Each structure stands twice: as C-alpha cells, then as structure tokens.
Length: 440
Image (cartoon, rainbow, N blue to C red):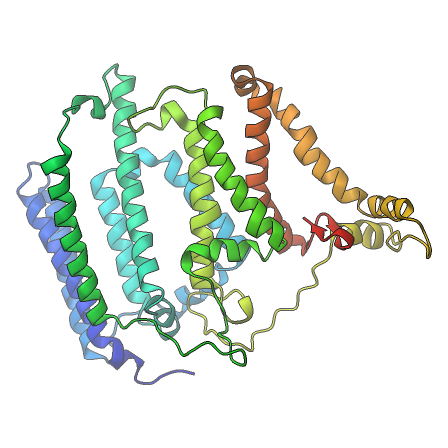
C-alpha cells in the first residue's frame, strides 16, 4: 500500500545523499584543477556538483512534484528486465563487455563517470517506495556497500593488470618489480594495521548509532518470515537449492569448489603471472575465476537479496513485494518430457512382484535419456574438447590433469545450464531416481 508520507520521511536522507555527491565531485574537481591537462574534466565535475546541489534542495522539499525520481516508464522497463533469464543474460553480457573493453573502463575518468552515474541512478530510484524498502533495509545496506567496494577493488586490480600487460608487451618489467623494497613488520605494518583498526572501529560505532540493528522478534514456529532468507553469504547456496537437490547444492557443489581451489596449483601449468597482476598472460585462468566468482556467486547473492521476494518469487526492483503473487509453474523431469510428452507413452515401471534386478533395469530404462545426457556431458565432451578447443591444454597438462580440470569446469557450468533449463523449459531434474534419493 502506498504511503503518502514516504517522500517526507526520506526527504532528509535524499537531501544529504545528493549533498554528499556534490561535495565528492567538488573535491574531485578541485584536485583535477591542480593537475595539468585536466581543466576540462574539472569543469565537468564542477557543473555536476552544482547539479547535485540543485537536486539536494529539491529533495529536501519533500514535495512529490519536486523530489527527483525515475520516470514511470523507466521503472516499468527495469521491472520487465528483472526476470531470471534477462537478469542472467544481462549480467553475462555486462561481464563480457567489461572484459573486452577493459582498457577503456580502467581509465580513471571513465570509472569516475560510471560511479557517478550509478550513484545518481540509485538516488533517483530511492525516491520510489518499493525500491527504498529493499535497498534501505538495515540487512541490505551493507550488501549495497559491498557491491560498490567489490567493483572498486576489481577496478583497481584490473587497472594494474592492464598497465602490466602494456609494459610486458613493450619488453618492460611489471610495476611490482619496480618496487621490491622490503619493509619490517614492526613498526611499519603493525602501525598501519593499528591505524586501520581504529578507523574501522570508529566507522562501525557511527554506523551503529545512525543505522538501527536489524533485530527481529523471537523465532516462532507459528510465524515465519516471508521470504525466509539465509545470511547474505549463503544466499548463493539458497538459490542453488531451487535447482538442485540439497545433497548436491549443499554438499557436493561446495565440496567441489573447495577441492577445485586446492587442486588449482597442481593443475596450473602456466608459470607466468606469479607475483604481479596480469590478464594477457593468464587469460583462461582469469576468465574462469571471474566467471565463477561474479556470475555464479556474486550475481546469485544480488539476485537473492534484491529480486527474491515473498514465496521466493521474482520481483522487479520497483515492484511491490506482495505475498499474494502467484506464479503457476509445472516443472517436469526429463524422463517425463521424453516418455510422456515426446513418445506419448507412460513411464516404464517394474511390474508387481518384480525382483530387485528387474526394478533396477526398469529404473535405468526410465532414466535412459538423463543417463545419456549426463554421459555425453561428463564423459564424451571432455575428450572432444581435448582434440578441438583445448588441444593445447591437453598437450601441456597430460591426460589426468586435463580430465580433472575439464570435469571441474563442466560441473561448474552445470549450475547456469540447469538454471536456464528450469527457466526456459521448466525442467526439474535431468536424472530423477527417488527410489535412491538421487536427483540431478
């Protein structure tokens, strides 16, 4: 239900938010003014700071006609693009664009422009009650901050890698080799850590004063939260549980992640890129890690935090979270798609009184489509890749190391593949053997 006093309640916050953006850009403009050749950018951010002060004064009015906000058409467009397929395709496309054009995006003024655009859009979006209810929830405020911090440190590392790749291409050593001076743990490192500890403690103290702790009422079996979400660092696992059985999403996949990280030093044959940032020298490893970390973990956390609402349904950022939203889904297993939908025959079942071996035979017959699909994916595909796409990897790694690497990579890709199959074909399980609690 729309709150008529919402804009008046957030007027002070939005005014302070735009004032902060104005001060931030005014300081940046002053610093750029003192640098040679940056006068143009200094004027740009001076004008932007002035515009933010105008938005701050408009927001402080609290009047619905004056508070700056995204147009209704823009909000509806974003809601339509917030479905699972569009979200996954969009984040993947963004990942590819940022990688291909990394030399452009690592430029300081480009990154600063992207940051300001993102902060401005978030400020305009927070004038919407539904968006503000999600982003300004005390549980979610740290996650919003973590998203920006993750973007910043990724930009710093990528910028350093781009600089090193350019230097290596010119026959020069990486930047890390130019500053090999060693410092003592005491007092240099300890003093730095002490200062950081005091600064972080002061920040957390101010945070605790101005942002209420997200404490809820005591747990009750007769009243559970809707949606009931895990802590943010487990939201990726909770999202996996939608597509896989608990034994696989909660045990097998996390174990494979740990095993893969342990096996990585023994599988890696590339000796370049040790001790310094580089992308060109370790492009395959970089892409696999970034895809696994961002696409298969961070995006799932963002999805579970901001797009999963009551009854674990998908909601757009500007859509009201109502528990009465019902989405009719008829998820079916691959065996039903093959035998019932395609061949118009009932699922093979063992006759009454059949022995154990006969029952197992009928189960294998029933699950033949899934077994063939998994066999092709995990058994046939690795050798096929070894003689085509990954021919060079196979020659350098050998059979055992290559097969471990290929199967770990294919198991990692099984998550987005299964998600896409669920969203597009309503596929529940590729392999469904409830007799042995084995579903995949």
